[in-house]
Length: 145
Image (cartoon, rainbow, N blue to C red; front, top):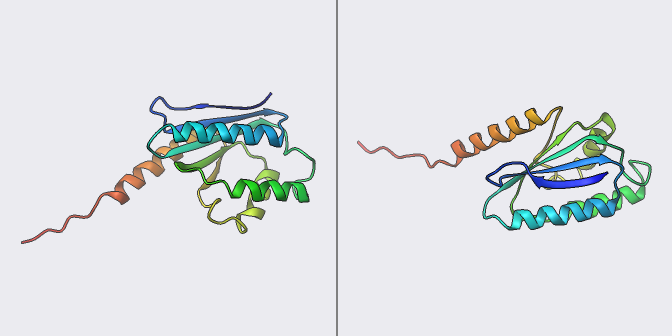
C-alpha cells in the first residue's frame, strides 16, 4: 500500500504513479522526489499518469483543511524540469472538486492536468497531445516564387 513510481513506457517518456490504499504526505513527497530523479535522468519531456483508482482520500481528513492547503502550496512550488502533462486516472468527484478549488490559485502549475477514467484513455490523451505538439512545433515554410 502507498505510492509506487515506475516508467510506463520503454522510451522513458511517461512515468506512472500508482496510489494504492492509504498513503501519507511523506509518501507523496518521497514519490515526487523519485519522479524528479527519473525525469532528471533523461533529456526530454516526461508526462505522468497518476492512477488513483484504488486510493483512499487525502491524508489528514478534510479536503479543505489548513493542513491540506499547506501541502498544496508546497506541491505547487515544485519545479520539475522535464515535467509534461499530468493525467489523473480514476479521480472521484471530491478529488476533482479539490483540484477545481485550487486551480485558480495555482494556474501555472495546474494548467496541464487532465482527468480520465482509464489507463487506456490516459495513454491516448498523452499520444494525442504529443502529436499536436509535434505539428505545432514544425516551423512553417516560406515559399518563394
